[in-house]
Image 1 (cartoon, rainbow, N blue to C red):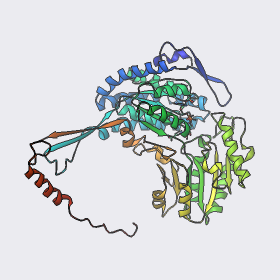
Image 2 (tube, rainbow, N blue to C red):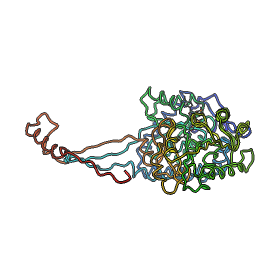
Image 3 (tube, helix red, strand yellow):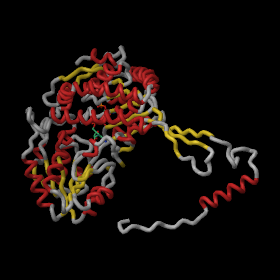
Image 4 (spheres, helix red, strand yellow):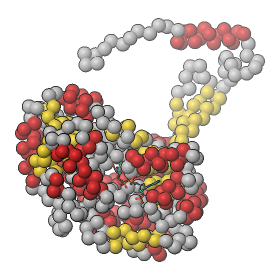
Length: 510
Ligand code: NDP
């Protein structure tokens, strides 16, 4: 791909370019423009024009356009997944799965926007009974989406699809590692819809920073917590609201009655799929002591059968971002130096491009492999005396994105005690594939939600309308208010709110 291919969505003044490289062999996958602050401002200005047209369409019309785009992406899935494979190194099958999930979200957002955003009547209450009350959710205008490389389609589409369906235009800055995927999305959108309601700007961090200053109405950022703080600070200068989807350190909890085979399988997949480069990937496991040995035996046996390598059949690809190799190496080294043991993988697991699956035990809770996001195919497994201890140790982390519980009887109870944005029971990361569920974190994992009705509303502002239906019996909002009206108000308020309340009886569980 050349810079010329990007003319769809870029300013003509661009001169500097950069290459995206294959993490498998270092080959140049594509050459892309480095968009300057002026280019980004121009892209936002064009998006604002497109937004005026887009927001004036009906929900049905927007849904029809989005469904056309959906079908174009779907028909080109093999091309898209090949591009994802080349830019990130992830296996073709994983790329296909990721894109398929994103298409499902696009379908949901297009189909459900009207239901969750259209004007609806709400109760006006006794005091304001003469009024009719309405609420509707209006698009913000132009949304800047800044995305990571690890799921270059699924992750930004969680913002893009929902922002578009809510009636906004979007300017998307993909990661410097996956610019081709970003361009693919903008190009197919333009082909499908004919107007640059979705456009892309490419470059390094500076281009993302420029987007925060370019006059957008909201920024949806997905990436590391450290960059998220920088994005938030930049947006604060203009009072631009932000959604921050940041890192994670997700745990799996395994209870005594869990299906251990399924728990081990899910743990391994959650830890090693996408070479462990998953925000909601499994990085820690807390297992009840009664089933710890059995669980570990299954997990270790399965992990030993998995290999990361440069082959067409490899289920684990390379580490996409070269500098992440040092982070993974340092977390394993720190765990081993503090008394941890590697039952699979270990100190030699980190190669030049690939990292082998690594299962660590006896790792102290204050070591890097437990406290910080590793973002590699590694997992720590710890023995706990009770599910309460498992929950406490799970919650004792600055990150709180997703979590997983394997249990039969108490799964829902345990899930309810975990402080995290999402929890899967007897499955891993399943919440991400359910379009009606909100996705997002707590604490250092960020705030705001994509996906589901919350994800649609994230890219809107609530508009309240009250309409007088008839003149009020009590005229309160006038300087002609009488003493009698004041007295009647007191009587009415006493009747409505003056009675002492009684505490509801607690259920046995409560
Ligand atoms: P980064 O934080 O490094 O980058 C994210 C995006 O921000 C990239 O497009 C990057 O551009 C851009 N950027 C960099 N600096 C700035 C800046 N100063 N202002 C504005 N934008 C900037 O994250 P990664 O790409 O490395 O992604 C991995 C991280 O993303 C992990 O921590 C992972 O957990 C998290 N993540 C979170 C998800 C969630 O939903 N919670 C989902 C997926 C990933 P460039 O690449 O050009 O530097």
